[in-house]
Amino acid sequence: MTKSTASFSPVAPLRCAPTRFSMASRLCVALAVCGCTADVQNTDGQQNATLARPARLGFEPVADAMQLHCGTLDCHGQIGRNMRLYGMYGLRQSKQDDPLNQPTSPAEYDADYLSIVGLEPEPMSKVVQHQAAPETLSMIRKPLGIESHKGGKLMVQADPLDRCMVGWLVGAMDAQSCNTVVQTPRPRLDGGP
Image (cartoon, rainbow, N blue to C red; front, side):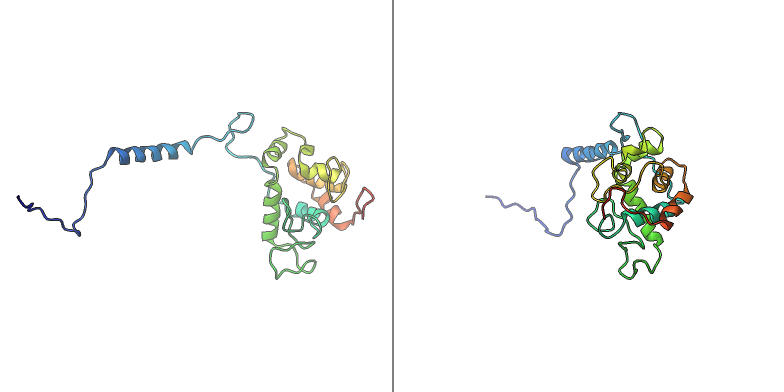
């Protein structure tokens, strides 16, 4: 019997030549990364780089009008709502902010904007681009009473709240209508409380 004279050192670095598996796995990862950069297509098969949104600049009067009529604590001014509104008329982002005694903060206006434009982004994009009527959006259908709304009917076509919201959506901001909404208390139009 002959003894092997080769020795094994457990601390010696192991050097492995690239195998077919490691080369193939690198290729798969590279192809997957490249595949993730494909163009986004909407449901109509048209390519869209981004979805159009209404302007953020000048949104504050729209948010104030919506907060007053939609953002109370029993409606969209509560955490569990998909369209959540923050501000001086209801839910506050910061526990230190006092409703009615402190104005809506810039962060609350930003949160309101993102909540509204994130509600139905594809239909909203079509409205903003004048490819669909504003009434395709639930934020217009519900307060008009076209669609069932827990808060009831809150506006009629061409009234100040409607002109405020629709004007903002289609790029024809009507700040005077928004201010009228904030300065004029409005009862529900369907006879509710």
